[in-house]
Image (cartoon, rainbow, N blue to C red; front, side, top):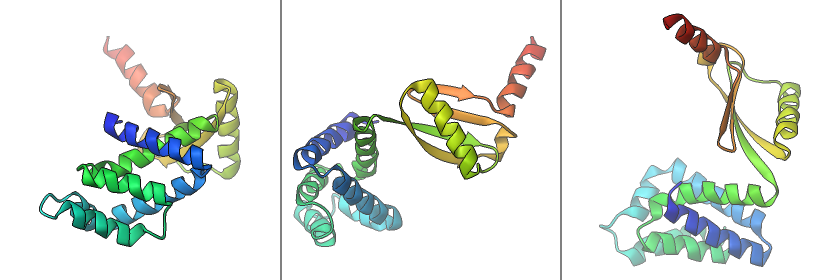
Length: 176
């Protein structure tokens, strides 16, 4: 994660804590992220040096003024004015990480060969919580290339119980 994005996220999170509005700020960021993702031209406009800084900030304000907390709007306008508009999605992801850490949770990216049922997801979450000693939020993805099993990335660690990884291990032993 970029240092600049982290600094903006930390500043925004501190404001959210002071105002006791961390969920409202997260919702505001999600709204901004969705607008930027749905309309790539909007992000291009906010980042364009060909458009005056004032016009870019005013456009952003018109779109979000009544939709996100004022302190959040000001910080995002500051990012735009300083040429960091393209870092807004990365900053939002960092904000979510800070919010999750504050709640004592960790994010686990879980990749499986087939979609998990709700019961399987609950069992996996409980096992990961026991292993790491904290509440886990699962980000589930499906990759048929795993063939079978599960791959988990969390807290800088990778737990790979996929069939693809096991086959790769066997291949390496046989190639020796």
